[in-house]
Length: 261
Length: 248
Image 1: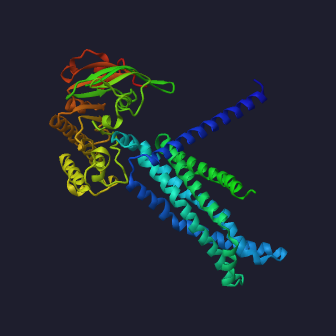
Image 2: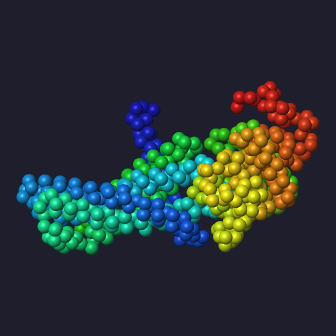
Image 3: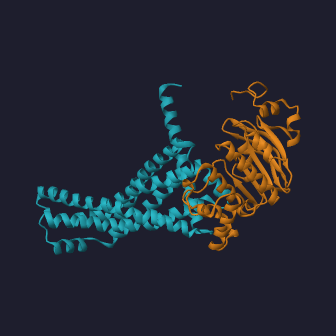
């Protein structure tokens, strides 16, 4: 086999591996969704997941959004000044936060905070035989561990995105009105009048997709963890990497769906 | 009765079980011994359906375990895992009463807690341990909680996976005595896997030795010392020389 054939074989093997992983993730996702709608349900686990994924993520989402909104206002003001367009700060902050930065940054923060935590927790449960213990106690691990987390992410991440959008806009508003000389009432008026329903819907839909991706990746890598500390570490790393890449890829696709005429 | 017939299981290129055939009569305590990595845990997991055999049949009271209704089947079993496998996120009493808080055996919360505390008492733990989390307990206490969880729903069959591993000799003795008492008192069928010979002598009615993926010897514990089987003799006396290779 010559060098070209060897290289092609390597590419082929990698492509097959990627397709196999995609197939496994797809099947895992379908299983998760089927367990979400079929009893038994575990309301306590669902409540705990709502708290963990939604409520406890609020500080990190809020801080990320406020600093991003503030920085965005400064950048647009400074960049806009090059062609005398400083006045567009409220509109660009609003559209930038709601259409792109809000959902993407919240998605990535959720991937960092929630996906890693889910993957590490489930992987540790796997290596310490807690998953086997669940099965012997007549409890399906997909129903007890995966379905509540995926459903909680599906519900809470769009809400977090909505909160992040508002906080980000308020970050821009604070910087613009305190440091850049914008009128408070005019800033809010421009923001509200510029945003369309489609912008807000796209933001929330993106949030729902990103939430599901983050939760599924955490659960998938956790359930497939190898043995020992190295297995848990690899599962956690893999889950965050995959969730982040899939969130960015999904963002590209969804932006195309919503905003390509 | 649990019956395994010609059970095979291979992981990758490693054949772990190469034709295990074994019967465990109802109400008896069977202990499977064998070196590390000989497939004892895999055998147990095959019976529970946690691992699917490549070949062979496993029956419980004549019914193929792969064809029974899973929840009803698993409801007949209790299991003590090697590391106890307690759920870190739940307090001790909820670990013990896990089965009683959900599924078809569900009971009111207060009643489930009461039963859990009674089972904790049965394994020698005081009620003030009930609200602690597993991480706050010593290894021996975790094993006892695991034992309490295994017996909480009054199963017909209990599996013990290396019940004394990692415990000091006194605590190992306590756990062995508890297992023997519970098995006798509840009249359950018990299956224990271990390589601790003091556990074997304390717990077993019958002993089976697993080596190279097959049962090398099987008989009453009273016959174990005079079996004449070189594999079993090497194992129970812990000799480095013999048919079992020391380096595997």
